[in-house]
Amino acid sequence: MTTSQRRSSGSGEHRVPAHDFHAPVLLEQAMSYLIERDGLYLDGTVGGGGHAEAILARCPGCRVLAVDRDTEALDAARERLSFGADRVVFARMSFRDAPRHPLVREEKLAGALLDLGVSSHQLDHRHRGFTFRRGARLDMRMDQSTPPSAADYLAEAPRDALARALREGQAPRPAAVAARIVRRRASRPFATSDDLVAVLEAVLRRRAGHAEKARLFQALRIRVNDEIGALTDGLPAIRDALRPGGVFVGISYHSVEDAIVKRAFRDWSDPSHGLPPRLPVRAADLEPLGRVLTKKPVTAPPGETEVNPRARPARLRAWRKAA
Image 1 (cartoon, rainbow, N blue to C red):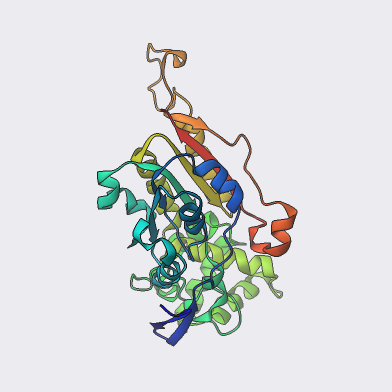
Image 2 (image 1 turned 90 degrees about the vertical axis):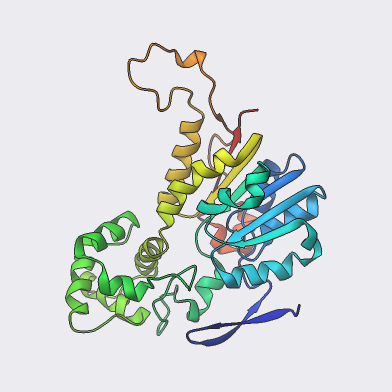
């Protein structure tokens, strides 16, 4: 395979270098929790393959199920992981569906990693439609074969659903922005990033700052890809697919994701969680599903954030299934 590949999209062909995705965030910290024994590991958001590369390189007895919805990510990961091709299987799917993969049905996972959010490749390349840079098309789909695109969603979503999605994704002025979107689409469709930024600035009555635009585009991306639904469904499914003693590592980049991961890991470590009230059973007599390994989220040290500023918001949490 060459050092770059061509992928086609609706806007033409684009070269996808093997290392065009962000440097793996919190790599050493993730590996210190994750790799403890030989076996099958799930990289549920393989991206460019940085974390999976470390698993294969550091653990000769480890195999990886490398999952992603993005075909460009899978192509880049195949190139990067070619040195361990006999120990890695690639699958184009959401991590929420990974526990149903034949490999996982045959063998419980020794560990699982989710590096959530969007990749540098997706943000930096206009043909992917994630960026709010001028003139970028509104797409935002991780899987470009699956509708709707961001433009489609803006054209079709009811006002209340729009406002709810923007609020849950922490966009500024969600109700007012949703109302303005509905008003504008009655006469002109949304096609590019400029159209959405114009709506935001009309609501703010001033030029939008970088952080405000980022939060609006983040909220829309989260909804288009059903990221909250995938995380809510995927966490317990992957937990159940772990073998006893298996470790689950989650890396999140905004507070909504981090809160979901934190709550899940905490609840799974509480033996009384989910019990009906007034049940004549003491929590002390019950065994939890596992235990949290990170009392506080692990964050990137200054040296890493200086080299890779996109690591700054990252929060790593780890949990171990009971043996």
